[in-house]
Image 1 (cartoon, helix red, strand yellow):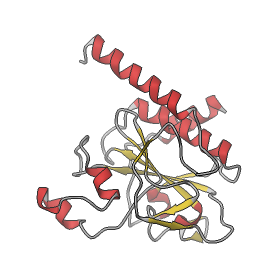
Image 2 (tube, rainbow, N blue to C red):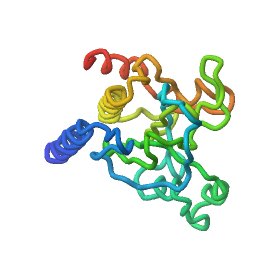
Image 3 (cartoon, rainbow, N blue to C red):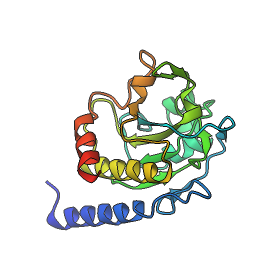
Length: 207
């Protein structure tokens, strides 16, 4: 069991992160001032006139089922060292990104402006509409399909979703899907470990 002091530090860090999230989105740039910013080269412009209308929740860990370290940042900036792990060798040619990442401790990281199209969804379809990257915001959670996500991640995620919806009226808490929902059979994340009821309860409580 964590010591009281370590729990206090964890709670304090989460409170600081939630305060940072409350700074919202700079609608001029599409960046969240409260996020740690790690610009990715893996993005392009959304097709003309298309606004973000969907939020997609993902799960990621690098290497699989391991947490911490710089590897997610390195993946999204095309600087993952393939020689350090067999899995890195397998994915060394990937050019992928997401808009936002929420780490296990609740830290929020941003890689791509919300204005732009991040390369997170791949071949995908939502309610009959294909190419979800065109009209979605990708949010990765550091985690694995079968391992419970941290309570603080749900709190930060719900706060981020609400701030995104404030900044972009085209978004709605009612239009939040998992990667597995828009790419069934191809993707499984955020997996059965993700508690959708918990997220929806937090969104209702804050709405």
